[in-house]
Image (cartoon, rainbow, N blue to C red; front, side, top):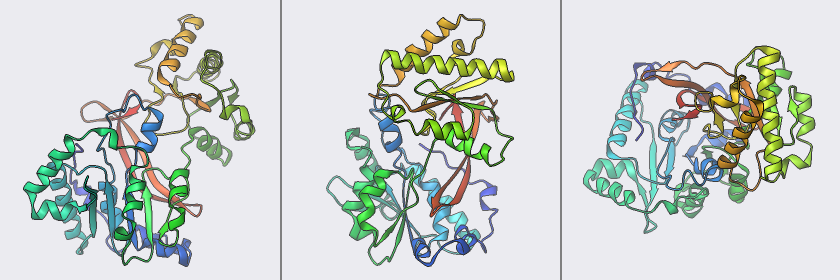
Length: 383
């Protein structure tokens, strides 16, 4: 369950200028139509179920779209519709609606939000109305979903839910803006035939190496030190080197074999050594420079041996090879890893490591920030 807290800071907003209005000058007339209705869903399964299918076999009902929809809805004339795989439990939804009421009182207007759940019988249920009108029936619904097998949750679930209920969700709406957890080629391919009524953000890129070297090439020099490692063993330190490496076809089809794992692991150990010997910096390894959630992170507190320069290098290498074999079960290895300067995180209450995450989307090449989140992490992975 997600714990919601109505901080006073949440209410310190300016009701005269919203996110939509701040960026009107950068949008064309066609793009402006996208602000009529927001369709939002978490869809994190596209990231996690494909990257770690074994670890998340029973993963279900996790949804982080409720709070973003609360403040993003204020910028859409017809509000938002949230598509969920499972209904929020009663305690969570009660807290959510309380926060919604507080913000509405501050803005002195109603925030239009619907939470849509597709029942096993195919009926589309609006959960807020059900919770408010028939709380006992809502509780029974939550108990039903808790007893269902999780196999029904799959990466395309929210996309298929939207397609099945397209006529209902977009009824009397000229254009809707679809905001998934992570915009992918799959979303574009599956929803492009609905372009007459749906607008989509640009496909995102979660490649940490690309972001780092691009910013560095544009004069952002005060960045933590980072070395990228191509799966073919190349060490990368500049944007030019990065662009040259990604042109090589072999890095996209490197088989998860013992020999290729050895080459990959040797280069990662070498990058750790370089950070120490060239720059006198501690290191942090991320086995896959792309993706989210921190699943490929190797925290020094959990994997101290690969960062221990008093250990024999062969011992460090063997450990890393074994870990890669156990962790990466796909047929192909990641295209690139990163070894970056270790930055000690701030602490949240409860001695939880904090990580600041800037969220948003790109529309026609322009980045629209939606929030800056303080995410808890444990051993380099989000909690």
